[in-house]
Every structure is written in C-alpha cells, then in structure tokens.
Amino acid sequence: MSRNITRRDLLAIGTAAAGALALAGCGGSESGSGSGGGEAKSSYKVAMVISGPKNDGGWGQGHYESLKKAIESHGNWEMLEPKENTASADAASAAQSYVDQDVDLIIAAGNEFVSEWGDVVAEAAESNPNVHFLMTNTDPTTDLADYETLDNLECVQVNLVQTGALAGVVAGLMTQTKSIGFIGGMRLPTTLTKYAAYELAANKVNPGVEGHYNFEAGFTDASFGANITEQWINTNKVDVMWGDASAVDNGARQALEAAGAETHFDIAQPIDSVGPDQPTVVTSTVTDWMFGEAMDAVEQGNFGGGAVIEANMENGGVYLGSFSDAVSADVQAKIEEYAEQVKDGSLVSEDEVEKKKAEL
Image (cartoon, rainbow, N blue to C red; front, side, top):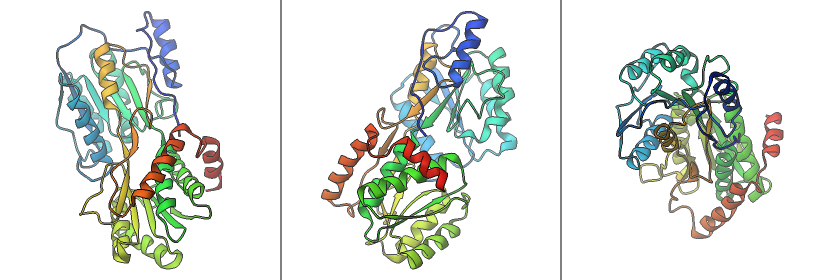
C-alpha cells in the first residue's frame, strides 16, 4: 500500500495547534507537531527492539542493516546494541530501559509492540521529551488510534505495491513454465498487497503467468515452506518463488534447490541475499527503512506528530539487489526497463492491486 511521503512544517506552538497537527500527522499529512524540544546536541543515541535475532537473514537483519547504514552517514550518532528476541511481554520494559538511558531515538522493528508501548510513549512525552519513538510497518491511523499522544512518535511504511511489482517483474521474466509461487506468514493486508502486485506485474511482462499462494504459513517452520514448494513444483510446475514468511522462505529455497538450482529460482527479501550460499536466489527485493531521515528530524527538532516516512523507489527505500549469474544481461536490461514503469506507477496501479486483493 502506498503512503504519502513526508512531511514537516515548523514546530507548532501552543496546545491547540499541537493537537491539530498531531491529528494531521495521523493521516499522513506533510506536517508534524514535533517533540524535539531542548538545545541542539553534539551527539545522539539510537536503539532498536526486535522480536527476533538481528542476523536472521530476513526481517530483523533488514532492520539492523538499515540502521547500520544510517549510522555510517551520521557520525554524531551512536547505535546501542539492539534488544533481540524480545517477547511481547517484555517489550514495554525493553523500551523503558532505553528511555531511562535518555536514548534519543528508540525504534520498534515492526508493529508487534504497538499495544505494549502505548504507556511508555505517553509517559516519555511528559518526563523525557527528548526521547523519540519510531515504529516501522505501522499505520498511525489504525495501529495507533488508542495512543494518548503522537507528539514524540513517527512511523515508517514501505511502498508495498512497488516491492511486489519488482518481484513480479523478475518472476515473470525468469519463469519458463508460467507458474510462480508465493508464501506469506499470515493473511495480513500488507501480505495481500505484496502478492497482488507480484502476480499482476508478472502477468504484465509475461501474459498468462499463473500464481500460486499460501497466506497461512507462519514464520518459523522451514519444513512447511519446503513441503508446499515441493508440492507446487510437482503438481503445478512452479519454477520461481517469492516469500514473505521469514524462516519458511528458507524451506522454499531448499525445495527449489532440490528440484534444480539451474532451473528453479527464488527472489529473496528484505536484504540482498545473492551469493554462493543461496544458489537459487537470483535477486532480492531490498528495503531500506529510512532511519536516517528520522535521525535528521530528531536533530532538527521537528520529529513527531505521527508523521509517516515512506520507503519507496524514489528515495532509495525500495530496490532490487544484485543479480546472480542466472539472470542474463538481456533479462537484466528488461528488468531495468520495467522497473522504471514500476517506479512511475504505469506498470501496476494501486486500483488494480486493490481489485486483485478483493479476489484473494
């Protein structure tokens, strides 16, 4: 789903104005109330809470690498060691421990902690106004509707239509059987958006492609991914896979490799995974969570108001990673051409995606 990109005006003065701007921020408007009070600092700290390990090869690692990248371009910021494998029951105390250290920016890697962080965010707005919160994959209009304040909080969302369409372009050009697959961990609106764009784009570049999907795989059972992919290969001749199910995707790659890495391919996400240890991966849909933009806003004192930062192809938040040798130069050139159409919205429209989602 596409979201309006940032965003900010001058820091609002007065309670009424701040309240109005916070409400506007919830709608993804271009202004935010900001909570960066106090004088400019010479150094800042950022920390992140993750539900899984930071080097999981998927979701957690994507966030961790995005933060490391942001740190490289922000020499006055220090990254604290992330709190990994954080259970929901421990999420509030994990965030509070960073508040107690006056960490300038505390990141939730996903919306898993939304309900647990509400009180921490509200109390920090009163007692630690220089502490800011950033939640990825979060929609403030729905996920944060019960929050007392958004003055010290922003969200990051990914243009999932672009992400799915890029994967679909690759799948459509790489399949020799016109049969592609997709595994999702849960039947979430975001997962449906990814798949809809994926199948639509594959058919735009290769009419007649048939998509096979499962949206109930969970995120931890690699054997499920291996079994369902093997079934699709044998029954439906699936030869290209893309997944949104973390460890389950690893199982899908195992099945593809067993069927023949020369003819069966995987598109990885959200980090660049091409390499000798992943023989079936031909490219990756990569997400940069745009943490640097949030860090800039903290420094400038205009962070907050529930504003939404969008990661997309225009700002480098969404892109295809490196290609394996299995992708010929001719196919890479076609991918590049179609990618420009994905970027300008002419290949797959949001209306088409919404119509397709209604059919799933």
